[in-house]
Length: 220
Image 1 (cartoon, rainbow, N blue to C red):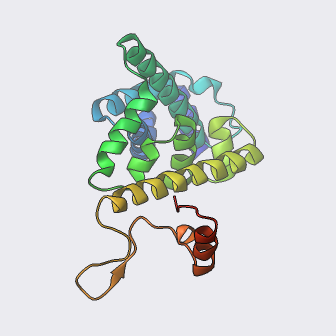
Image 2: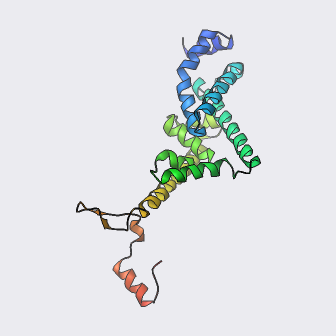
Image 3: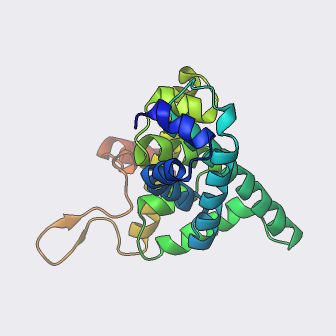
């Protein structure tokens, strides 16, 4: 059954066609949702809600994009609505909000090991969504634009901005961890020098040191 026949069957409420569409797409949809909400129960409930909307709205599908991209669009909208509700609930409970909570969790994780997910947790929902669509789901710029309902140029600029923020989060976390382990240039006992918490651009050259001492200044 090709995609057009699958769509027609789903519009006719053919349960076998609905099951086939669900089985073929649910894994990627669930993974995207879980990586945004970070909770299995919430991800499961949201995934089921996505497919309720998919099957009840199938008649509105205009085929201006692939069926998978259309499902991603519904999933993104459901996740963003859920995250907004969660932030509202946190504010009502006196919390500082969903994003600050995510950052707090990420900071705790950095005490042990900084990984990409911890860095992603520090980003805004907008940045996380576009990075996950590109690198976790493997969508191209056109499909991402269709999922987020924006142009490819906007996708490119938002993706570049999100990548830079992710790099900054990773770099900040790396320096924070390394600064707590040992002084810069400490020998690790194996005969090798290890740079910890020092960026190449922060090291003082002899010339700069002489200029600082001549000016009577202290190095920050």
